[in-house]
Structures are given as C-alpha cells and as structure tokens.
Image (cartoon, rainbow, N blue to C red; front, side, top):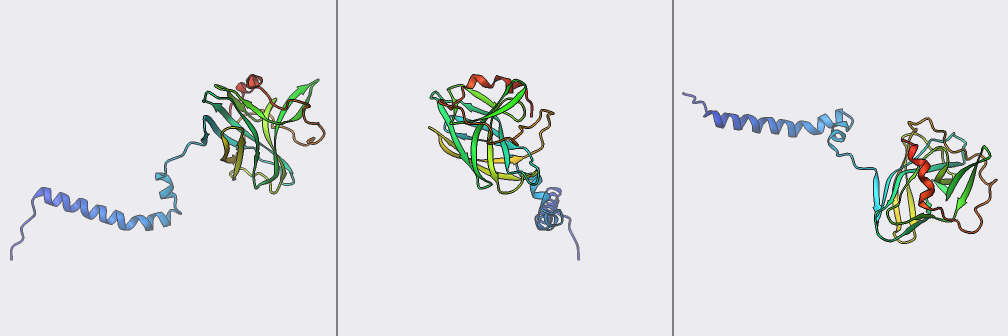
Length: 212
C-alpha cells in the first residue's frame, strides 16, 4: 500500500480548516472559563452620549452618596444644541428617586446657595458644561430610594421643550478632580428663584475650568 502526500497548497488548506474548526469548538468553553471576559474583549466600547433632535448629551454621570443620603446630584460633561432652534430642559425623572429638580449653585458672601430653576435655556450653538463642584447647574435627585454606589448605572429620562423626552444612562463614578461635590445637606432651606426660572447659556463659563 502506498501513501501519497497531498500538494503543499492542499495541506495548508487542511491545516487552516482544522485550526478554525478547533477554535470554533473551543470558543464556548474558553468563554465560560474566562467568565465571559473573552466576549467582553471583542465588544466595541460605545460612546457615553445620546442625541435628542439637535441636542447632543455627553457623559451623564452621578457622584457617590453616603449610605443614608436622601439626595444626590447628576451632572453632564456637555449638553450642546447643534440645531438652529432654541430649546429648554424642562425637567427629568428616574425610578431611583421620588423627583428630580434643576438646581443652580451660587457663591454669595462666602456661602454656597442653591436655587431651583424652572428650566435650563439651550439656545442654538450653546455648549453647556454641567459639572460637579463649585458654582453652576446640576440635576438634584430628591428622595433617593437607594444610595449611589460607584460602578452603578441607572436610567434618567430628560424632558425637553422641543426635543421631547430622551432616556440617558447615568453612571455613578468617583470624580478624578479635587473640586468638592455640591453640598445637598441644606436642600429645602433656599426658595426657588422668583419669576423667571431659566438660566442663560453664558452663565456657565466658570464650568470650563473643571475636568472630569
């Protein structure tokens, strides 16, 4: 009985087929042994931002709270109006809290005071930074139903005057900056702004110094 070797090109093709078949069979086992991390390594990372009409909402995040805290804050790297028409953020809601309010913090006579706003103006071309720490605008979570823990994620529904409602994912993370987080312990002691409750885009220039 005589054996004849297959041509080199055929042998290479057979080797590739056997290798691919073995990899295909072993992948589920390898993934299980790796606790699913094998699949995570090939999953593309999605940008942490969404669009609502002409609005671009980038990197919503919250800072961690103490276990017994009843209030928390939500911030945004930017909210940008890329459209030609003005819009306004009218409010928000989440299953994690009883209610959500738009708040602005101002330093007056060395004391940080917080005011509730009826809305946040978003004129065409505006690019606002709603960052943690110092003066500026943020969303206040009132009546937290559980503490905000680093690594957690929750859904927040934003309500705009023209763009309508839009869900965003909010990640709880420890800020890398040393800027102090807003102190919510005196919430309810400061009355809402009388009359006009909006804040114009050009009042947020101080937030540009913050880096998250």
